[in-house]
Length: 97
Image (cartoon, rainbow, N blue to C red; front, side, top):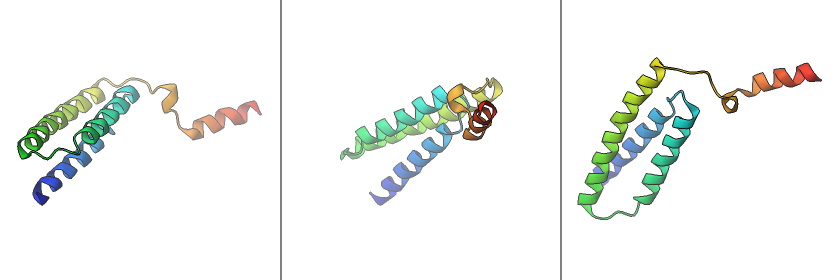
């Protein structure tokens, strides 16, 4: 059981880490919400077979996210307004004062 818990925690950490690498704000935030939601929904699973199925599904999702992050880096777009840093906002505000 402890080995399974370690695998699950490592999978969760890796999924979150990979999701944060996404360039696109919308994809990044959706993926983070989806990962957190799925783990929250399945935290009460007791059946070992179901746990192993979810673990396998999570590993497949991790591989897919890794591929999509690479593709996203190849076809990067400009950042959205919501993604701008606070320093650039402060520079804009100081120009108007």
